[in-house]
Image (cartoon, rainbow over all chains, first blue to last red; front, side):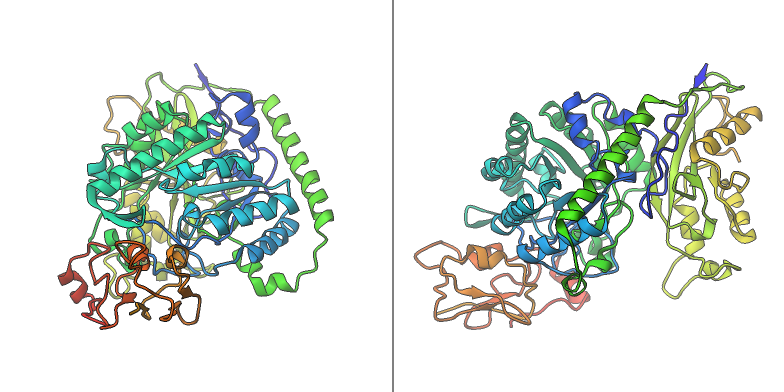
Length: 502
Length: 92
C-alpha cells in the first residue's frame, strides 16, 4: 500500500502569510480544470492554494455603497483591528486607490492581483469600481483584476466586466431557495424600491444565477462564496454547490459565519450560533464530491494587503504613500522577474513530484486522524502559546491532506510563562487557554515546537496528545511520522472509538 | 419640503448615487441634503430614493424629525431588544 505525502515544501515564501507549506491538496484541488483555466489561476492567491504561498493580493476599498442587507453584516462597523470581510479603515477614491495599488505593487513585487470587494457591493458602485479598474489596467497592465459581488446587479454589468478584462469574479451565493434566503437577507434595493422578505430573496437568487450563467458563457472564471449559517442553510449548501458547479463555477468557498454580538449584526445580536470547525469541515467534505473546494480562505478585510494570512495595510496608508518615491516602470519590470521566477519554481516542483512514501505498517482500513499543527513556512516551528492559528491536517491511509486552519486568541504574553493565559477574565466564561483547547476539538494530536507544562496537562485532559518531538520538521513529514507511531500502537483499528486515542 | 440626514449616517454614498436631484453631497461629519434641491422624489419615484436604499436606521428624517427608517425596520431586530441595548429612539 502506498502512503503518498500529497505536498512537500516548495520554494520558500518570503515573509508571513499562511504558515503551512503546501496546504495539502494544493495542485490537485484544481486538477479537474482545463489547462487554460489552470494557467489563469496559477498565480492567483485567492483561487489557487498553491499560489497563496508565493503571490500577494490587495483589496482597495472604493465601493462603500450596498444594494442589499445581509444578516451577518453591520454597515456601521469600522475598525482597524478586525480582520473580516466588510471592514475597512480608510475609504479611497479611485485616484487614491490607484496610487495605493501602484505603491504596494512596487514594494511587494509578488503582488499579482487587485480585487475590489467592498466594503459595500462593488457593482452597486459601478462608476467608482470600473474607474479604478480602467485606470489600473492602463498603468499596470500586469496586475490581474477581480471583483466580488452579491450578484444583484451582476447581469447588467457583465459586459463591462468583460470589457475591462476582469477574468475572475466571486459571487456570494448563500442559497437557491427564496424561503431560506428570506432568513438571510432582510431586504434588497431593486428598481428604485426597497423589497423585503421572500420576494427580495427570489429576485436576488434569480439575478445571481443569471449573472453566473452569463459570466461562464463568456469564459470569465467564477468562484462562489457561501456563508455557512447553522440552522439556516447548513442542510442546503450541498445543493447550492451542485447547482453552481453545473452552471460552470470553478471553485466553491464555504466560509464559516462570523456572528459576534459586539459586531452588532442581526445574527450577532440575536445569538445565531457560528458553525464549529467540525461542522464546517463536514460540509466542505460533503460538497467536495461535486466541486473543487477552497480551504485556504482567510476571510480577509475589504482593504487587505499582502499574502493571504497577513495584512500589511498599515504600511500603505495614504499619508505614507504620498511621501513614497516610486519608479513605476522599474517596479513593473521587477514584478515580471519575480513572477517568472516563482512560476518557474512551481513548474519545476510540479515536474519533480515527491516520491510516494512507502507504507511502513499502517493497517489497511485504519481510521483517519486529525492533527493540529503550530507551523510556520511549512515546518513545525511555533511554540504552542505563540500560535495565531493552528493548521489542521488529516492523516489517513490515503496520505496527509490539509483540512483548514483554526484561529486562536494569543494567550501567551511572554517567553517564559504562559500562566496568565489561564486566568478567566471578568465577564468571560473560560480562559483563553481553555478556549484555544476547545477550538482544537476533534484533533487527537497537537504538533508544536515547544509547549509549556500547563497547556500540556490541559491538552492531555481534553484527550489531545501534545507532541513537541518534531520541531523544525516539514509539517507533512511530521504528521505522517506521528500517524505511523499511532498506527504502531494498534490504536487505528476501524473498530476503535474514533473520539479518543491519545 | 425636504428630507435630512442625521448623525447616524455612515457616509456610504448609496444615497448620493440614487438621488434623482443630485441633492446629496459629501460632508463631515456626515453627508448632507441640499434642501433647495430635495423634492422627496415626488414626481420621480413613489418612494424617496435615499430612504429606500439607506442601510442605516434613523439616518433619514423628514421635516418633522420622523425617521423614514425607524429602529428595527431594516435589521429586523425586535424593538424590545433594541431598547434593551439602548439603540432605540423615537425621532431625531
